[in-house]
Length: 116
Length: 116
Image (cartoon, rainbow over all chains, first blue to last red; front, side, top):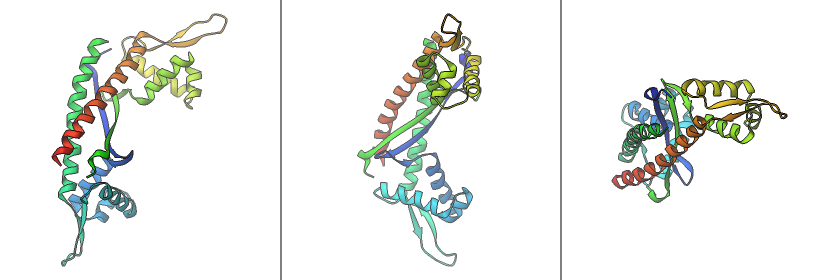
């Protein structure tokens, strides 16, 4: 085994009672809402229907005791949507988990390959 | 956040120079070859073409310096395929990585949720 060329990748999901709660796609949606300030613009950006985006947000909001995305009302430019602190924390938590997991896996892979 | 209901799942891949080397599907194929003693029976069991199964094995054998699956020749019952020690080690390494990763993620998730 050419061990020095081997690497490891992971994909993580946080689940609530076995249903999806946070994963790559949902985090990307939160990040895009943050960037665009709107669920509909985020949906277009991510090439999904508004209904699909809305359902994903609704599902996350229901698991979290504080909603992750809220509507911002009106003004001249009309309303939009914005991340709450809870939404920002979810992004951070998921990113931290992924970074920690990657570091852990790099170390473990090296250890296990030594035994081969 | 109803933190006590949250759990975490992961999917791992070992890659070689950014190409797939070992993941859930390839490990399942190795396990099925071990069980059935044949690449063609394993392919049927896993609902994939023989060619697809053969290509996956060939790809793994090329990354590993020792092949993971070898043909066993003849006798009355004709030939079949069997896992080498390298193939057995790959299954064990992947299982160990997944178990360790799951334990790590459970602990990290708890820690991170406390900060929310």
